[in-house]
Length: 165
Image 1: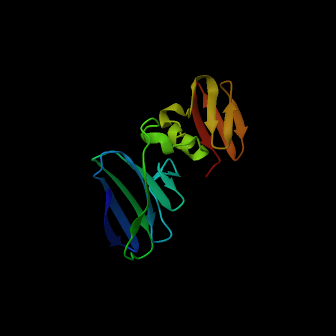
Image 2: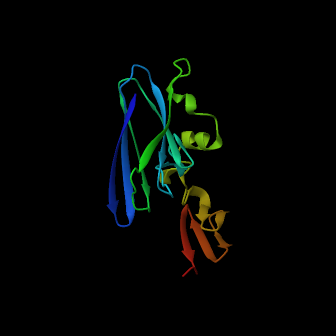
Image 3: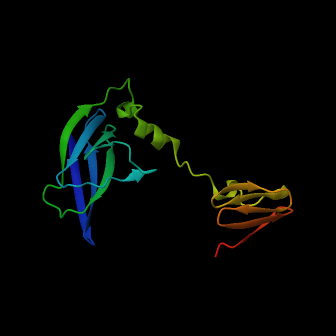
């Protein structure tokens, strides 16, 4: 048996919904929750809806005797009930808690993490006249090169831009 507790808070034309699913049973349950309001803004990880979100519904795996939480936002004013239990199923113990995870592209992207390199890894100026410009990378042998939108001068690895104001 599962029990759903829902709390809402309305701030600045946005409704924040926080829910807790309690599993009082002796087996793990897969619970699908469906919001009554549209549109739904699920939490995002790396620009993709968080694990378990599929369209406007969310599926959680709740271990036996435990609880699981979920939250989302919506611009709609809350109506009662804000969130309902759409389906409950028993988790097959041989497949584990992540059985609902299929190798869909959005799951792969989420698992890879942030593709942005750290700022330290992006070269701005290097030795021997290699200069990174806004519109590309130019290489100079301790001399002057003209790049699009201005002149880039490299002297022993130091770069100065002119004509870009």
